Length: 285
Image (cartoon, rainbow, N blue to C red; front, side, top):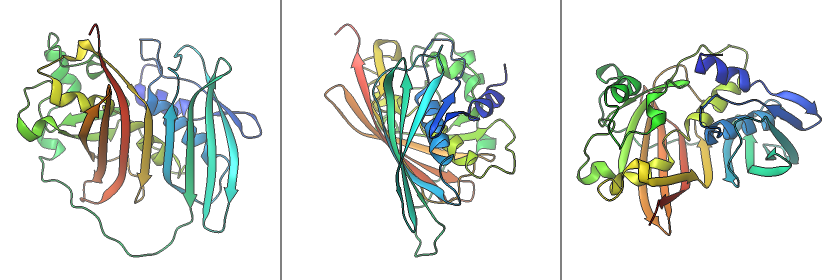
């Protein structure tokens, strides 16, 4: 399947192997590895298959081993708690008999309550920006642009700051990007937008902590991998329109970088928040 958006929708339709056990396919990345966002999204889908009439509001996961892109992934769901307002599930993703990822996810019934939120940053609208893939393909020799940036992915992305461009001052510590799912969402699947947002929440997160250090090491000299991932859904997930994904890094130490992000819809509503620590090693040093 050549359409990456259609392929993502297909692999988010998990096969039920046994009670609480599901199997998922994979994307064709071309490098033999699994994208962490895909595993998070499929784990959320697996958990959702065991919950009725509740929406996810948070998930917390750990990446333990690299995934093998040539093999399917098994998702084993443990039904931790079914409460009056909240439901908790634990999911372990398994390949070759070993856990590659584990995640706790919490679901909640719809409830009214007090509300407030941070404002969306004042940035150009997506219609004023260029598609990242087109820009990256024009700049094939730039060592600060990774191979993933040149491949068409399920989400179209348009960076507010020039992709691979020189950054100064505060622009080294944040990276606002507009995202939009390229496919068409079926109208009868309320969990799907949350799964797609979970997928998108890992796009470019780990590399955000490399931005302050581009003078010291380019992208080809860095080995980066996600270590953990936490995502909170504040308002109904929307992925069939543009979302502003505002990524920022707060610290790097011990070959680890800490990154955070917020998703805003076009109306400026804060939709979701993400935190992730990633491995960031400089090769051959």
